[in-house]
Image 1 (cartoon, rainbow, N blue to C red):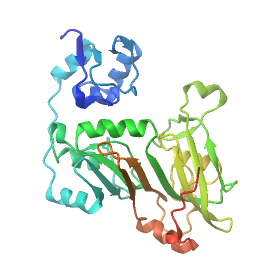
Image 2 (cartoon, rainbow, N blue to C red):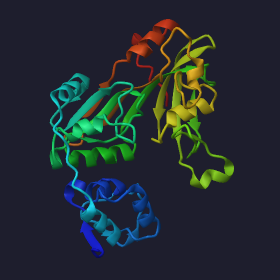
Image 3 (cartoon, rainbow, N blue to C red):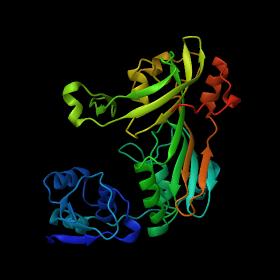
Image 4 (cartoon, one colour):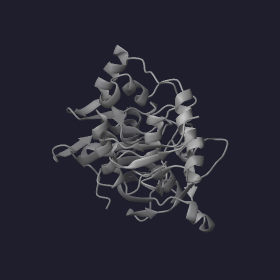
Length: 328
């Protein structure tokens, strides 16, 4: 068994989350094992106890215990097949913006961003076959499988680190469009409800934390504005997440009594009119950020998916009437 190692964070690893750094450096170390090492203080950054979501900087020293180094020795090296011509064409077709550093895709509903136990085809896997090492394109944020819209990709690790910092410090402006059942009251406001994971047989979901759970909950804040409404039946809502928690927008809209149409985890699937497509009506409409290399503004908008266009037509919403992004 290898001994304790002090590993220096390289320049192109600066800005990475600690848990992602471990996944890339020590792929044989499982999530549960890493959490145990962190919880017991065996992993340290510059001598201090560390957390999984902590962002590390180049030049820092990470204390890597024997369990991690042993797992790395035992693990087969990850190899990725070269992306097929069909997958490369798919990425080209989804591309909304591209330069030498960044790619912005219009992710379709139903295509997963990352893999899982039952998910073999996903964007991260396709990207893994489009380059190696420093030049491998990398995710810098996530969208749920059934959420469509803008997805930012960094073309190399150093850019991924810079974009990761931008998302973490909330300097990236994100606007989502949703169609919800009912009409939020007031028509414009802020939802500030801490969220906690609710474990159950139906998979991952979150719910507002009860008073006694606040210490274990994640702070979650969403600004919203109603852009249009169909009497009291449905509303087109512009959403601006201030924080970025799992299922935040879906859980928040459900918590105020207006779940997103088609949302089978939070009750919105029961509110879709029979003539419409019953799938999640949540779309990452627009993303705006400063380019990490030249400081210029990158502003990308994704067109609505077909099932949401169908719903807009049914309710008489005018998608071209404006960006409906006035939520503050």
